[in-house]
Length: 121
Image (cartoon, rainbow, N blue to C red):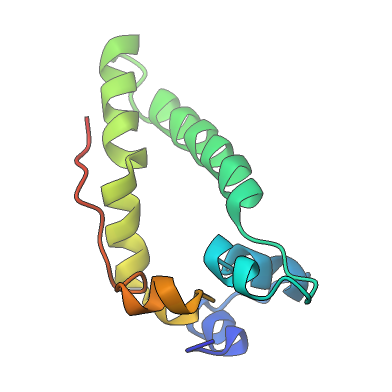
C-alpha cells in the first residue's frame, strides 16, 4: 500500500472504528485477484452500498435545501453531484489514490491516478 491508513485517518481527522472495513474500502478487486491465498475482500460490495447511501444523503439534503424546486430539477442536481467524475475529482483532491491496494497490472496501467473519462448527465 502506498499510504498508511492511519495517515489517512489523521488527514481526515476521523478515527474509524473498524480498520478491517476501512482496508476493504481501499482494496481494489485486482489486488484481491493477485492475493487469493490471503483473506482480502475487495471494495465492490461496499461501493454498491456507499452509492445508495450517498444518493439518499444528497437527495435529503437537496430536498430540504430547495423546498420549492420540482422533482425533475432536484434529480438533475443530484445526478450532477453524485456522478462518477465529480466523485473521482473529490477523491483525488483528498489524495485517496495513494491509499488504494491495487494489483500489479492495474498499477502498471495507471489505475492509481487514472481519472474517468465519463461525464455527468
